[in-house]
View (spheres, rainbow, N blue to C red):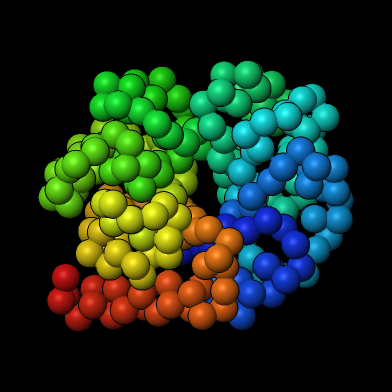
Length: 235
């Protein structure tokens, strides 16, 4: 079954909010400064029975940051690690050498269609950001066209797929809104991931203004509704 996750900076209030909302899976937003507190983060995170995935910072990464995120990954028995392509190009070999057990998940960002398929082909592990796919790669596409591209992607690359970002995107709307803001889009993605046998994180990657107990609960309720519909073969 899919693992619906939230994403937050590893601070105590955020752990509390995610837990109370019903989330049992979480992705960490990290900076180089946050990683300096890696031992404290691990200690705090272990107080909550969640499973975790770290997101490597997008800048100011050096050998110390690499060592610290490996400590965090091992200390929390993380499920994967998300990173952007520039960080993969710069540090992928170091992670492969120092932590070969780490499941890397390289994220698609501002890519045209040719670049998107090149990203999927060349990286050993992938984080599919479905909002980025629609917003940047398939500009102006209909939901059916996004669905067709996702089906093609999963048919060829599902074995590489280690992580998924799925905000509730609507063309013309703001980025990083909760899943419940775009039910048809989210249900389509969940249906396809489930059919493909994907069982890793699907992250409601939202802006800080949506990191509230009510908004997070709404995403959980949406997932429960989807599961009920599947159980009764409505979808």
